[in-house]
Length: 420
Image 1: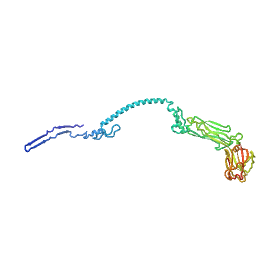
Image 2 (image 1 turned 90 degrees about the horizontal axis):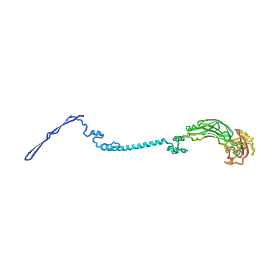
Image 3 (image 1 turned 45 degrees about the vertical axis):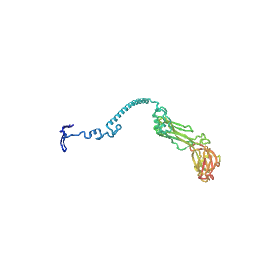
């Protein structure tokens, strides 16, 4: 750093001269002043400190001439305060932090002890709060029939049950392939070639549990079961020969016997469980067996109670062949023969006939037609020709009742006849 040498030179003393005259008074004062002389060496000087405190201000970080620290501090030092006050606030904060650190150290020690104790509890947990009764309804996940998990149920089991709830496994659409999907006539024989069904969410079915396919014959003794069925093994080959009949003992169709065999013949798949052990609903294909009935017209007259097996069979055969203008208005399977059909025949055909299983005739309480006006009751005008044994197209016998009425003047062609 450059050095400056200042050499003072003492000035000459000031000299005052006074002269006076007596009269008039005249005072003359003469002052001689000799100025101070300062010799500076070297003559070129750099001012490092500034005339207005610029260097000091720069070191503190405030503008020159400022009397406080300005603004822009954080949460400890206030804005616009002197350096001394700033140090006081900083000291107070440090002292407070020391107290907080001391308290935290105590808390950490306490928490460490608590964590250690909790870890011991969790490691030894077997029947604590996590394994008490768990009610899935409290999760508001809309279980249809949740029940309550028993004490000790693992959380994994609960979660798996939740999965099964939202992706429930089902087995539906069981179908007996190879036989008619519609109603089957009494005495029919056929072969169930295979069974098919539909599996949904198969991954949630317990693969270790197999099922059973059951064919049920309510009339004969042909019921059969197929075990060890894997849920996904569809179609499953059966090649099962079957015979379908209506339960009627030795006289099917006779008075007092079954009118139809509904939802008793079936092919059912069952026995599966989901991965939590809940039984999956079975799937069933039901088969309905019914009798054949006829409504026909014919020129043949059968007297009351006069029908025989041969006459009754000939009546149906003649109508099927159209002999002498005979027609069949209805020939098919029906659960009770309580039905309505429109007759169509030439004017030369004199009679209408209803030929139905005798057990169906038991339920008929009225015969009506729309000849003349709707709902015209002709009950009591019919002729009961009696019953006969009819051998149906399946080669089995059915006891049939024969009812005759007049087609001239009673039911014109195009009018209906109704049994109810």
